[in-house]
Image (cartoon, helix red, strand yellow):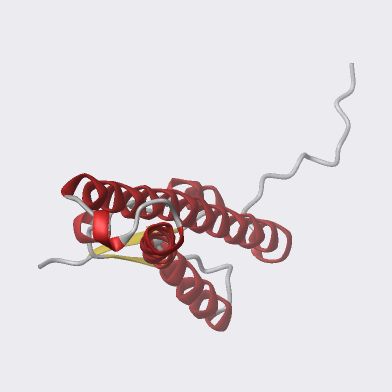
Length: 147
């Protein structure tokens, strides 16, 4: 399997980084910062943070949502109007549906949080990069144009 390497040379390129929603379809990708303006220790820190955020897909909250769905269903069976004696296949399908709904909601919330974290990190890096390390910015000439 080949590993894709995204090379970032300018802060605006960070906006192109996206999170894949399904981890088993995600390409094996790493991010490298190849700017001469940024010191090596800062590059290493940013690369580690970006690569960590890149692999975050919300799976932890998906698993938690799945477990909450199962527990809610089991509580419904234990304390609700349906008792174990009257349990049927319809009730088992309802339990499966409850678990899948919990899984889906957890995945959606986890993906939203992962994307928000990545977006926040990209904003922080861009702000620091532009403010402290960007020496290639165009500047206006100091001489006034005479009419």
